[in-house]
Length: 533
Image (cartoon, rainbow, N blue to C red; front, side):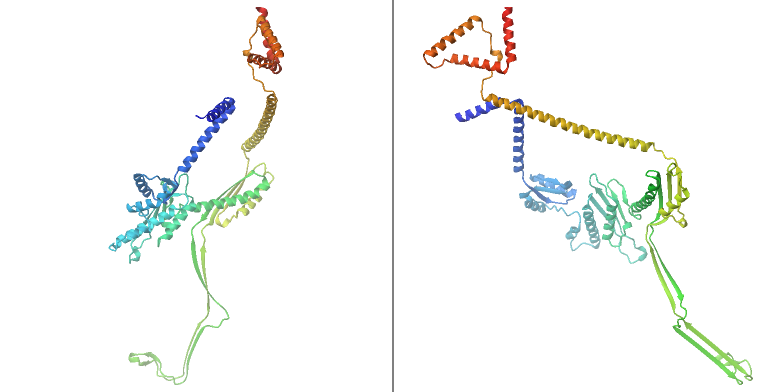
């Protein structure tokens, strides 16, 4: 290995050995993060890009396509709940051709694509059944596209056409819906499904559609619609609106929480139509058609009169002599008549009857006349006695223990929040102070290290110092004296031993300056040991 590389590794090893525990930990963490990042980047760069092969697949279609991809060893991914098959981008078109060549058609299970496979020799029955299946498939796809619907199946019961009116029947439909995980269909969504299916089939009414979910719950029944949920919601909305109106009137009078209002309403959701025609004659208006006839005979010799006999021969009643007279008047008038036609359509949701019950606190309503209060409540609720509406106002003693406990709980919760905020603020102050003190200490340490670096000295371990006896001390002193004389006489190269001794002496002096207490303790120990010896 080249010397430069060896030297670089040596310096790196020396630097690592000089690291503290914290520095080594940070270095290991950094190295681990670097390795993980390199692995993640390499995996991301080497991972192929995926594109959709088919989307909006039925579970059966997705299963067949996945089996073929597995058999051919092509990587794939499933998204959108398994309805979308993803393959590598460079293999999309190739796999589509192979899937089509194998005879697999992802859209062959439903929709108008079924009509493409019909031959010219198909019977009328086959055509009707295929058309019904195609319509069911298209409706199922449309319902499945709704938010919150994972799978939908539509079954239609379309009666055969007949020339007999008495034998005609309305078509019906059944819709099975599997909602997405963790979701439920709202009443509006169910009503949307009902309207969609009923409007897609000729002659089908919304009440002819049944909707069932995967749990077996009937969301909409044939003949009843969406199980009356819409009417129930409207009834509850009306009751809440009336109760809120009464409550908003009583709160300023009695005080908040001093009155309880309950409203029960019976609403009529039947749609009715009525037509009324009224004929009246108008006075002073000339008749449209008027016919008058007047016939009169006078004289003495009046022709004989009588009843006609056979062959229209008059049979005389008298002899035809004497005075006679005859008068005939006829009058006919067709007057103008006014005709008034009234067509009334009663919208569903009218109030048949409602009952209002109000309970007021006895203490708050002690000085209030209940009759006056009842009149006010009736006016606010729109009470109609002709409908049989009932309003009742009662004065009762309210139990306030729950309210007091709730107020105490709220006060305690507020106090806890304040205490928690104060504790958090105190903790932040302590952390900030600790960080500040740590920074100050770090600054002092760095300043001391910088000052020491101005006169670098080798650290000396006190354990390396050994006690010298008097003889060796005198010998060392003599040697030092002789060497000093020799150095004074002849300038020679310093002896390594002398250099070591001088370095030790300098280190001891520096140690005395830096750690005088430890040095004094060491010398005291040596003196005690010598005295005991």
